[in-house]
Image (cartoon, rainbow, N blue to C red; front, side, top):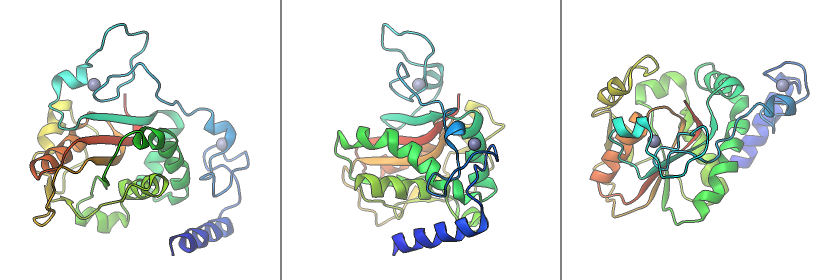
Amino acid sequence: MKTSAQNWLNVGLGFLYPEICQLCGEQRATAQEGFVCRHCWTQVRFIRPPFCERCGLPYPGDLTAPFECTNCREMELHFTSARSAVVASGIVREVVHRFKYQRALWFEPFLADLLIREAKSALLEQHWDFIVPVPLHPVKHREREFNQAERLASHLSAATGIPLNRKWLRRVIPTATQTLLTREQRATNMRGAFAVTDHAGLDGERIVLVDDVFTTGATTSACAKVLQSAGAGDICVWTVARGL
Ligand SMILES: [Zn+2]
Ligand SMILES: [Zn+2]
């Protein structure tokens, strides 16, 4: 069912769009490649150690001692650890923006590939019970017609075999965009934004929270907080991109 829908999508996109990179508009790129050519691909910056053990913030230079970044010192984070595949700059930033706000859905395979490349092996080293996407508020979901976090989470679920769960976590307050807010304002903005459904019956499940971009961790931490209060066990966060 899903495969045929995907094929249909590819056929549809192939018909509508020539196999040209949708970033540079010059090189060849297929639907399977998310319409990003090899040349543009080389501009992706993968996150490599050293980084903050807690929130995954890359740290320039060498580290000799475990370090806690400014972000973690100022935020109360409710997940155990957060990791991102790539830095949210350059083409990645552009792709995420166009995917999310301009319905550039053909970029989905590209973004899913970045996430799976980095998250799959890390997740399979331990046991995780469920992958939970950061939900959109129903009103926003209706407007946007898709939830980018849910799309990415479903690819990660298919690649790892960890089941997807989109029933437990709900967004109950339609929060304003966080882009222009400070770290403190973001945390306040997220207070009470999420809730766990009454009948979730959580009992120590180890959960992987998935979102598109991690900035301060305010959103994913608010999700982790309610999941933990409802009885979840360890919670880790994976996002495609990390804002610096
Ligand atoms: Zn290109
Ligand atoms: Zn940190």
